[in-house]
Image 1: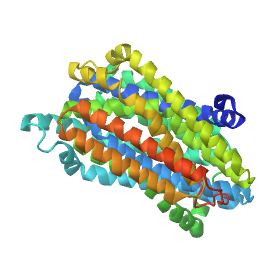
Image 2: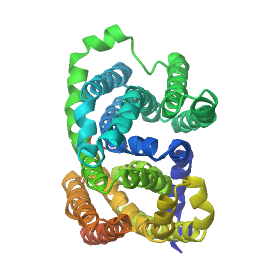
Image 3: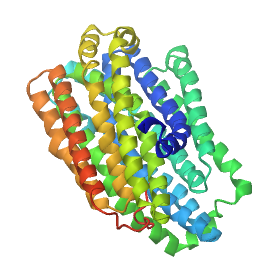
Image 4: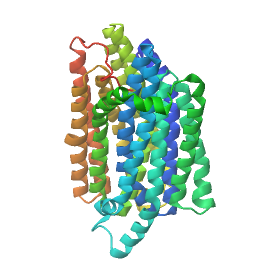
Amino acid sequence: MPVISPSLRLVIQRTLPLTVGLFATMMVQLVDSIFIGRLGVDELAIHGITLPFQAAFIGVQVGLGVAATSLISQASGAKDSVRASNIATISVLGGTIFIALLSVILYLFKAPLLDAFLSGEASPEHYVVLQTIFNRYWPFWLFSATSVAALYLVSCVFRANEDSKSTGKMFLYASLMNLVLDPILIFGLDLGIIGAALATSIGYLSCTLYMLLSSGKKHWFSPIGRALKAIHHAKQLAALTVTTTMNQSLPSVSAFLCMVFVSSLGTDAIAFWSLLARIEGFLLVFTLALTMAVPPIIGRYLGQREHSKINEMLATTSKFLLLFHFSAAVIVGFGSSLLIPLINNDPTIQGWFSTVLWVIPFSYGPLGLCMLVVSSFNALGKPKRALLVSVVRLFALYVPAIWVGTSTGDVVNTVICAATANVLAGGYAWLKLQQFSATPITTEAPTATQAVN
């Protein structure tokens, strides 16, 4: 049976450690939204506006992380410790500075950014209320996003040096600190929505500093002065980062467009969409870990020229993924009556969730399959195929589906359209995977420009 095949067992063994850290992160993001939801729909709506920007930050940091991990791993394999440590320092320092500068730019343009979501959709009095909340929250949220990026970039260096356990532990500890600080800062110290951002910043910055200090004896980072002189290493990292970030930027663009469409339905819809996005991330955490665990296994099989094992692994993993998400959807559906009161106490939002939790979770299996196929194509050195699947999923199916759904003026219809797009995307990805499996694999092991996390 597929669930006990050696290849699937290997995939699960590699995936579970990563799942722990990601699970903790997603759980805290969901709890963040729940706590903020207790403050009111307006606060939750403002928090929801940050989603597309969060996707943009993730796209940049993951793109840089993919490039850094690939180059550091290659240098370590070649026993070139100088090059590996230079790239590690450049990636963490340069990446954090770049994201900090991006945060400053976004802060300076806060007024037009808010108008993009709320202009014409709120009364003048309500707009002033939302603007006040946004102006207070925005700088603190941007700082927290930079803190998260810093920890991620440092963790990429650890993973590139074959230390994934520390990464999982640090994300877990950061999430636990966030979870403990959230109610204290939000309600205990009466900081409101700002407290959520501060809790994230404290948790992630603390773990970032700990990882940097603990890496001192391992010599994974070079002195800043030496790294800054390694211009050729910086150029190499920059060139690869452009390629990887372009692929990672697609979800942020689609998230921005979708939030603009959803904002036309009002602040309640924005708040609901924010919570739904957190739940989606929580339910897709195993898939996200899977997309990080599978590429290295594919790379190993390519290097050993055991191509038949690649097809076997992808087939069994795909079936297991679909079964896993179907089971999770059933559990969520039957447990929705217990879950919904914990998510939000607004009657309108609760009414929407009572319907959609029986709909969209069943589409996460096909969506997860699509994500797995994209990750696998990248690992196989087929970036054009991966890009095609991503473009079809996001811009030929998902974004148009959200536009159609919001055009009806109904939130539930929008979710149904989104679920339909996910299922169609999964079907398309499965078709592309079957076409690939039917042809001999001629790809060499991924180069530094093709490897992925």
